[in-house]
Image (cartoon, rainbow, N blue to C red; front, side):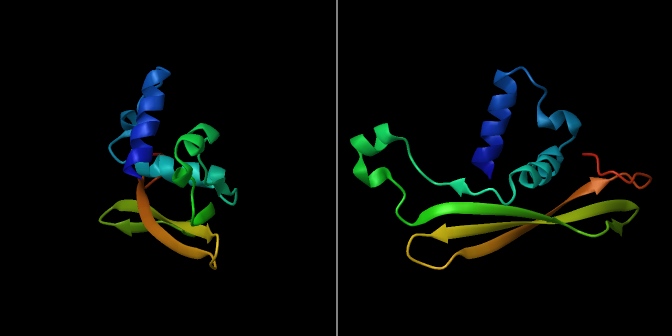
Length: 122
């Protein structure tokens, strides 16, 4: 995820858009939650450009055909010492060439103002 975060930051900078950090140090976590909701259940195809395969035939993916991402938001925020945290889980399902799909998940959270219903970044 570090590489994706770096690439997103570079993209924002190149197009003269404000960095995610303008919304706070944990804005990346909130952005990731929103991003996964946009791409969820859409297969992310694994591949390489034809030029690379011509130069190096072993560069093409051999084990994973595609990845499906899904985001599950908790039903309600949890309160810790006066701060509300909204938890979410990102499921990654790896579809293999010669095996059954394998899934794993990552759990994270973002802070919410205690008087707000909508989860803004902090």
